[in-house]
Image (cartoon, rainbow over all chains, first blue to last red; front, side, top):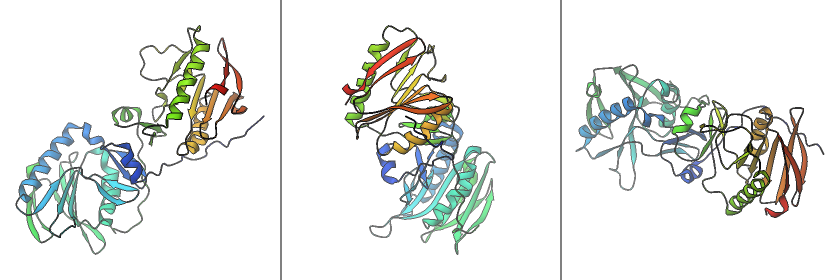
Length: 179
Length: 181
């Protein structure tokens, strides 16, 4: 009795959805187009330190603005894509509707591809106007703005301040506080 | 850059060191994380226990053969599997995982894992030259016994109430699978 199986000629990609993700009951994962991505930064002390400083910077600046700063909360982009940005600024000004205004990702050399190439477009697809990269490898912050279907670099560097318009609220963030 | 440009699909490529840090139940196949069922059906667990007992009784007198349920089978630095049952005739030492080719692996499939078990893992176990690969289908109460011959698996036995005689190193193991359902 012979049963001939075809050897798998290519990698079979997983294609999980949000329901699968919930069943895992884990927090240190993101889901991008059905593929799980581990949030490895939780094991990186340098990343955690920069994240804490960046979080405090946004939180302290925005605390009386009516905007809320949260860390690693779920942003569901589509049924197969769920991200947990390091920093998320959201507005609850509109009744019963949360508006995501800004996300920031703290990256080291490991996170370059997803954070620089994949995530900006996913956040843009969600209509999030501001995207910030805090690069602890290059010691540099980068501010991107989604305008007219384009993601534009507005400013970058180590020591600079930038005035954001967050749902009508002007907020000046001094990035040198992070380093 | 245009925000609506179709992005290239970028895949992660994790290693065993990454795998060790993960929370949750995962396997790692060619660098990709594959979720394991959070809690297999009771029938799945019952069959696994009965098979452990059945093989255990038969191999009790052998000092070399060890049954693991479950265990990390580290195929390579980017592929780590957790078969439902694994029999190895190599002493484990102090290792946290099996990295030498086992004699037998067994997977109890479910609708969500069937494709992976029948094709992807089948191919991995065959390439690793695992002597026996058993696939148990609890839903249809069916077992498939694949034997490696000339580096390819041959289905040597299939059905519900089957008996089979396995040869593992110096041991001969006669298993009656009719009792596991």
